[in-house]
Length: 75
Image 1 (cartoon, rainbow, N blue to C red):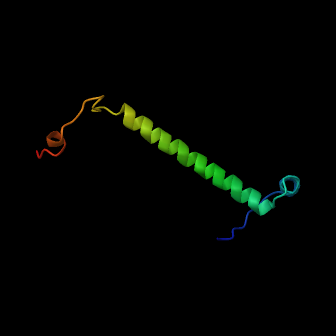
Image 2 (image 1 turned 180 degrees about the vertical axis):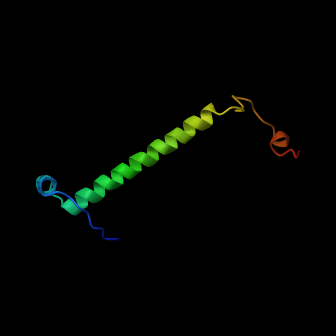
């Protein structure tokens, strides 16, 4: 695990420490968890958008059942 340095104003730092204490965690764990949730949410949204684009892409078979020969035909 890597260490990083953050610049944060005193008021936010104290509020973060108080929040972490109320939730029986550390400020370090709080920041780490919030960052992980943000990144994972972004990844989930990206994957959902990729599937939406694939579903809407032109040339989709729209229920056509392909035969093995059609799938492996050489052009």
